[in-house]
Amino acid sequence: MDLDLLRTFLAVYRAGSITAAARRLGLSQPTVTAQLKALEAATGRPLFTRLPRGVTPTPAGDLLARRVSDPLDQLARVTELDEPAGLAAVVHLGGPAEFLTEVVLPALAALVAEGLQLRVTFGLPDELAAGLRDGAIDVAMLSQRPRVRGLHVEAIGDEDFLFVGPPGGTVEAPLIAYAEDLPIIRRYWLSEFGERPPRDAAVVVPSLLAVRALVLAGAGCSVLPEYLVADDLAASRLVRLHEPALGPLNTVYLATRAGEPPTPGRDRVLSVLRATGLPTPR
Image (cartoon, rainbow, N blue to C red; front, top):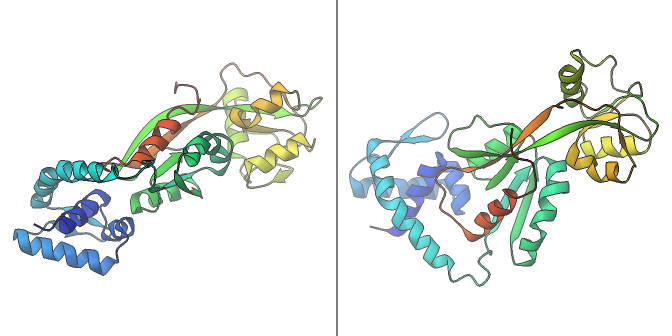
């Protein structure tokens, strides 16, 4: 049986979508559809049921996947041994702009020097999970647990939130927020003070880095993740305006497509991301 047909079948099986599999394989959607039809003709059985969004395997498809996945994955690992650095494949990484900029990308710098090719997408959790499902992203760092089938998700740490301002600042200073509904500030206020923030934001800017820059410049105060302000606190450029008993935190999730065969580049990236220095989830 043609190995290319089996590889295409397995890609569709794991992606749950002909479109996503085509993108992952670098083929056109009609080519993938034609290869599936050829394989179904060869096996004499339908392998997938078409859905309004994607496909689902038939019992024959499940059986074929169980039979061919290990041999094809082992063959892929053998062919990867020919890559000198073992990191030649491009890895598509997605996550929140600030967290990737401040924590993740610096941690991956050594892999880039070793030959890793990286393409980065910033975005919100839902759009990143959709990109992961559809094959546009290989690895995603998410601030919410995704509700998308076909993903492997693990909690890798918690980010703590701190209420900070410039030296001499007070809790009555103007609020700087990254969204009009004050999501992080509101969560902190409800957790620590049992009420909603007492005033609207003086400035709304859709970037935590920009919020931090405004607070550093003395424009007001805000609630920011600890990783973003730890150096500023250590250097006394910012101060805590409130000491919480147990401040609000947000779990960071690492997500990949379930059942994907290992690749050297992605596996090294995952190893680094699992050791980014975040505290253990509570």
